[in-house]
Image 1 (tube, rainbow, N blue to C red):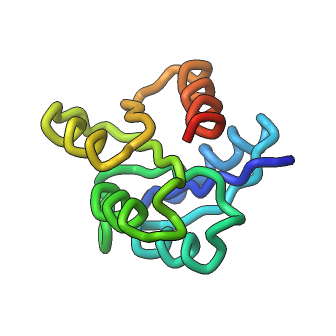
Image 2 (cartoon, helix red, strand yellow; image 1 turned 90 degrees about the horizontal axis):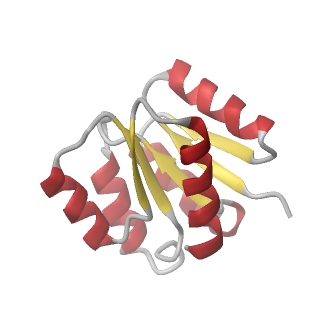
Length: 125
């Protein structure tokens, strides 16, 4: 069964690149510009999205707010979430992990390492 990844980033070029990269690896992708839009898509289709790949710094709702919303929502709380971001503050990273973040990938990232973290999160929640 194909897995669907929701790619959340406020930069269209980054969103498109990530979707294209993931599509080439056999994943289905959905895209959202910010956490608010991502949360709406998740609530509309909770079983249709297997993983959320989100930027951290975004307008309207940032990655941390999105993570908090997902983890406090009954139907969504088991959904794996990965941050792909330039943010690298240890305190923020620790807080996200405590909230249930699956992985924190810092940009620029190594493709194979990034893909293995996605695989791991999809298989282990």
